[in-house]
Image (cartoon, rainbow, N blue to C red; front, side):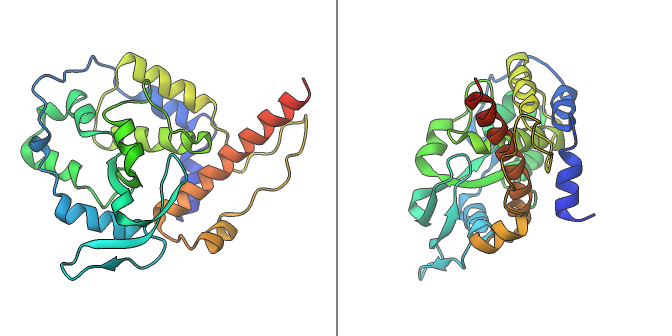
Length: 240
């Protein structure tokens, strides 16, 4: 199955809602959290993520540190070329993971989670100030400032929780389900009230931006769906 086909299948009608509803609901157990319990290796993981997500070949200094590239920060849509302006964000923060199940993992599993560069939903290169703003918040407490990325944020959060068997609390689950209900089916037709016009194809967008990685293709498919929802909402608002 192609990446795009898989993304569309995962985004089938009510797919996100069902996925969010399927997460186990338990109260958080955050006592005893310590960041070093996850053995996050910034020296190895950060340059890997920056290299994976840069839209241009990265440039490194004499010590091998990534200093420049081109990163489109998810959640705010800002492009950076200076690596100092970018931080690596755990979609599900380490403290949140600890509180929702990682406290019972062994050290090896916590380390694997913290440094998981094989699954693109786990880590993102984002605007440094935005990463700090997000902190340890969950979807009941924080959402991307750029609304067009909120469906992708919900998808990534739910995907990570599913992959690692992490639970959600009641407020978190309710926020995920509510947000998922607002996410359209990828490629869905416009509402009868109006035709917002064709959205750019994934191929056209990738050709324009230069992004060709797996995460980029998935994001484009879902971005198109979110754009359709926004267009429908604007059409309805104009008719009131």
